[in-house]
Picture 1 (cartoon, rainbow, N blue to C red):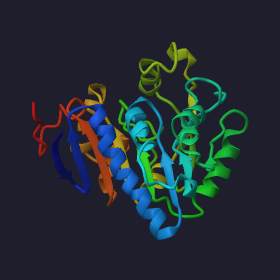
Picture 2 (picture 1 turned 180 degrees about the horizontal axis):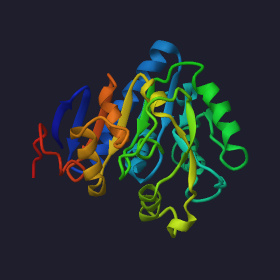
Picture 3 (picture 1 turned 120 degrees about the vertical axis):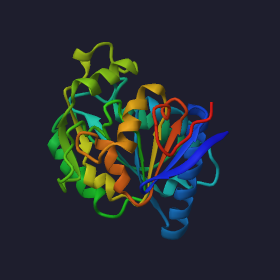
Picture 4 (picture 1 turned 60 degrees about the horizontal axis):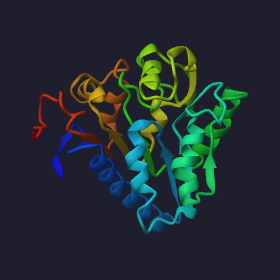
Length: 260
């Protein structure tokens, strides 16, 4: 059951009961956008996010009817540098198991951080910028990172992908979510889609459940738009929806009453 729909700046904020209903509602919107893009353009180009916050969303999206997945082309937001594809935390592995193999998508572009990360960033970036992205799926990190753009994020570069250093909070989040046994196992660098490239997407659907994201959500929606709070930049995008559950929305103090 939906709790509240409102707007913060240009964002549409939807607050729902729990992560399951968040995933279902976000998936319905994403599916409608994919169907519309395919109907109007003959194809849909998407950017898919990974991580624990996306589990319920992707489970629902891949089960919804009426999406011609053969006409969907996929890019992803980020990938660790130096992590093999068979590692449990590999985002390539994640997307294969949770999106591509489930739907039969044939056109996908993987960032490869195993060999020459910079060359991969340039190659996939060129493909990415060859045509507009219809829908980008995103989350928000515990430090308010957007993709792997940790604070202070680069809000100015025009490069589609960057090699970034991961801060301690970001790396600890990966441990807390169960992807790694300890911080020392988490790579120190990643390939990340740049902030300006994210904002070039025609539509952004951000799925952000869980209480551990509550402070980042508050900072992103109620504080200044600043590189120190990377996800705050979403407030400048004309077509972004953010899906929260009551836990991730629990610290919001203005404009969004929370039903208990």
